[in-house]
Length: 421
Image 1 (cartoon, rainbow, N blue to C red):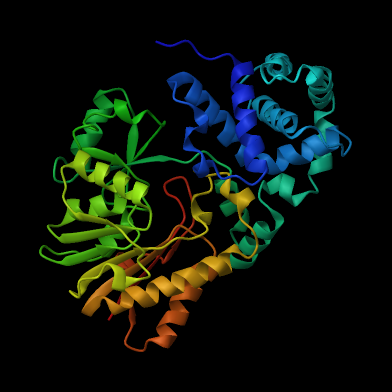
Image 2: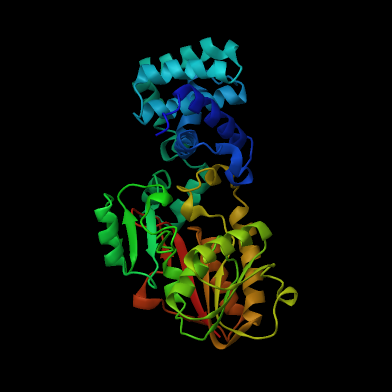
């Protein structure tokens, strides 16, 4: 077994990534940034994700401790990581301080050692006063941008604080059992026998008590199970699938929902994604699960480029969105999004809906899905579409399920609307 990496090295690696996010770069833009080494990669990801989830608080603390000074961006990011390490209680206070100072050398910034040492030790001395000072700062308290807080307060006046709190938590690790290979109860017994613990969520999803590496899941390589949020697993079930249907997954990557569709019914599936490299991931997931579909790199909003004229019985439109319902999995998102983004995405979502409606068969059903909690991208888009198309009938979801899911301990945040032509 590989030795755990030294904390100073983790601080240095994580600080470089956090500094890039603070400068406006998405984590998705550089997937190799975390490295390839197992223990180091895992420790760095944990540090980066934890720091970004609490960025609003850390940023306010650094401002207070530095007396509104402007440390070098990488040193500021190092301070954010060290403060997260201290407040998460993952390390003893003196260890976090010592290793934070040592990280300055690892980062080739030895002149910053005294500054980092003084600031972190001041935090330990004045923690109570700093807590009181930041209590009046909603960004520091809720660890989301102010515009995001305001939007959720308006949309969810009774539960906005709970939605924000979930966005700051570690996400659950959900599993989807391949019903062609095993039942959820059978697979649950297998992972319990392997020393893992999980619970059933809904009809067939499992949620692990603690996340594990996918390679350790029994039967993963053989396609018996996939990692997928329980909320995301509802999409394929809401489509009302039957054998022999012609089905389109219009924004398919990385392929979880497309694979679930094929696990539930024998259908003729076309999986589209505008990014050719992401289409490769769809194909890889299909191959691991022993499933077959046509995968094509194409823009779903331009059917003339890819449609063969044969209408689809079912369309899954999991459209691009702000991803505001999954920020605990992608914590950089909440700091990179801007107030105008929900409206910008809504415009693209409307264009995709209009295009896909053209290729839906009469009596066919289209499921509109986002992983957003902003109504501007959800109910507002669907309501406007239905107002423009009197032939579109919005159906109730199975079991009278709510259209809007907000993130909780079992699932992420999603919106679903089922339309029939």
